[in-house]
Image 1 (cartoon, rainbow, N blue to C red):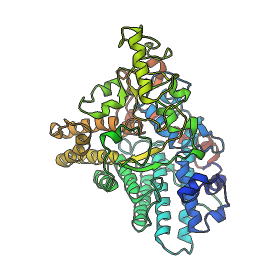
Image 2: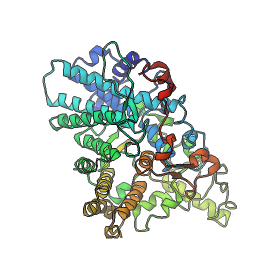
Image 3: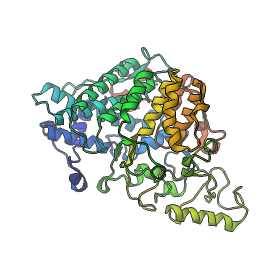
Image 4: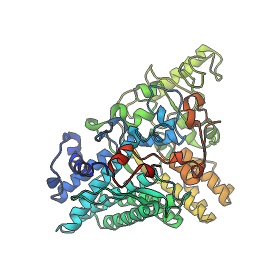
Length: 537
């Protein structure tokens, strides 16, 4: 890694930012303690983990990086902008325009690739420090220590999986035994050696070892303090994601089923409540964002919520593909999460239909046009400065609309696990098993859902893909779903504007197009003697 010694010190020291209890979370300032002290006791190691829980969502500038592109708060919506799920209706204030135009991840000098790479290695370095200290030390085995080790191994598995699926060719569309993956780094002691790129297969082998070890420890661990912590259910969920991405269908199905145990699917009222709290019944893993450490104008809800009082949302309502939305049955209550007839009040809208009823094909008079806007503003609590747009999302709503107040970030839900199980069983050609899994979600969302309509593998997969695109819209999965399914990107009938999207409007399928593989940061190539320009993606 670049300046690996410094990276490890940063990882061990700067993540000591919060305490173990909710009271401490609400009151304590962000402080740092020495690396030796951080690893001196299980209690202090838990502080390191608590720092990682916060870094999952918070602003976290690294040397050479920017806080504006860090944490899942940024990368969840960014990956969906690149993958075509979240569609921008205008340039807005410029945030993420280069992401949806496919300019950021294809440039090795951008902060986007830098922060994604080094922040995940930050997680790895911190996990290494905990794992190595406990494994080499003389600590009594307790449920609390098992909890710490279980979470550390899970974080390392999660981070390596995020890296290898983003900076390497997809497992299912490449040659994993020979395709270059990412460096595997385990040392936390001098000489802090860097590492070459391991093969994709080698990285996956390590991920699987780590997540299995995590589950073993968490089986005999104390209960997680809250949903920000990685529970055994979340570890099973990470394992399910890993298995799905490599086509290990049986493991994906059984792990997904284990992950969702005890997490009932959302009711209609819960699903339409805004996805703003990890207290929702089916949230397995998420970040509780507190006032003192919020991201404000770099938060998840700033990027995606139509009610957040920031220029990104006021001038650029996010929309769903009109082609996708028009496939949602009227009997499916999820259709209420988008507004297909919202008036296009933005004169800067990229489709050239904004600013008034004259250019909006859905309205015939000025009064009708602005009355529709006023009703939306009043219903959802937006401000008078917010624009609306056809097919705009109202899936993500603030608890305190029209403000910049923070809300939680959701990383994993039971619905995702149901869909993983359904996809895995369909790919095994277990028609009955896939139908049973798919019906769990379909029946919960659509009063007229009939799973018997999907009786072949092809029919099941088409419906599963549709359900993923609707159910998990805006939750960060579309970019990697395209890679797993080897599907091209095409916004022709989506409502996206070619003038805004440029190169991101269409992209060939991942097996034929290496632009789906993110560039390695140039800073890594410059500093790592084991990686040269010839190793660049």
